[in-house]
Image (cartoon, rainbow, N blue to C red; front, side):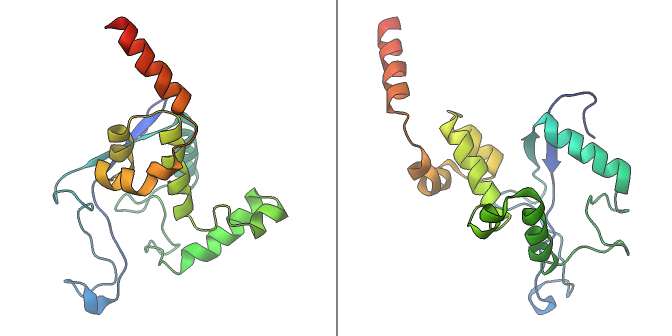
Length: 169
């Protein structure tokens, strides 16, 4: 349920439905419902979302509704989009959102690139690594192994924080 008004919200992720060849799934189906990576089968993952995304989701649901199982994105027949559909839609979205020069650049070439951009932004904004790891669904170890190199230009902030701590102590 999305919050009312202009507030941010919290998505609660419970399951994933990855696509694979039916020969590789236990059910013999192309999509197989599973728990979330690196979590127990019944463990949820809360994901904070900003007010802008709440508004976009609210408008999307008002316009398109949801599938009978609650999914936001589904085909005309109510099926799940296949992984082959996403690249085409993403290419068209980039053309609408970016200048021609940006479209030709590697900027957000894949949807997954947005995840990297978000995690890098959070770390550079000073959000503590355990919080970023929780939001991204990583362990702190993997987060720092992958993203520590993106934290840039914060030496002066660190020095000031250390100085403040020494003066308070």
